[in-house]
Amino acid sequence: MTHPDIHFELRGDHQEVAVIRLTRAAKRNALNDGLILALRDLFEKMPSTVRAAVIDGDGPHFCAGLDLSELKERDAGQGLHHSRMWHAALERVQYGPVPVIAALHGAVVGGGLELASACHIRVADESTFYALPEGSRGIFVGGGGAVRIPKLIGAARMTDMMLTGRVYNAQDGEKVGFAQYLVPEGQAFAKAFELAVRVAQNAPLTNYALMHALPRISEQPADQGFFTEAMMAAIAQSAPEAKSRLADFLEGRAAKVRKD
Image (tube, rainbow, N blue to C red; front, side):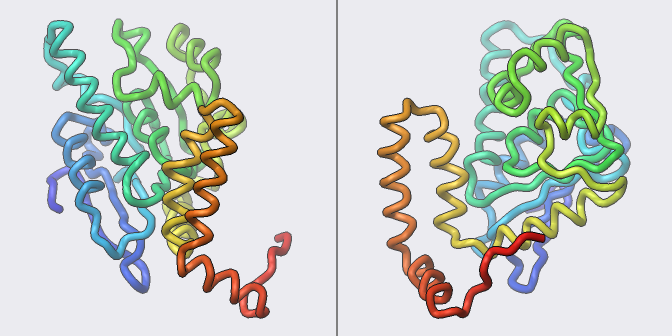
């Protein structure tokens, strides 16, 4: 897959990690429609060797949001369809073939935060800051942020950000839930790649369950969630790879869990 604003490469001993880097550094990696559609196509056509992916941004910023210079005047119907196009693209990130780790640094703003929130793990370095400036610009989030971001930080915090223009720094952002990891400046990609290599070693069906089943179970009523969990557990443990891994553990060939 080639696109002028995306650098794509496979890394790892078995090309098991896809590295996806936004390369519009001069625009702070702002997202336009072509870039969003390219991300959608990339996740739809991910090579079969890939078991995990890292999304990064070239230059000092991860992504400063929607490229407002390309924002066109749309009527309500056109705006609806445009937003739904973004939804479909970012859904391929969240519910695609492999877990995705975001390497956050600098601006994670607007649409950039929407992209980050579609990833499964977020690693931020100390230069990271988060904002949702749509409120001050007379617009509203349209790339899935109204659904995904409150699940990370709560609806009240998101409302505050959009009403007041509040900006979270890296430390406060990690505390409220924007990122699961906080590392020194310049180390986000290295940590994200390290995690991706680790994630790629998991049984693919278990990773699939965590990406596709767990978010749905968490939104189901308890009785339905328990039933879905039971079915997913039964399916996962029946896979040949699961049986092999369990045998390795029971026969002393697999490492036991230890504290760091």
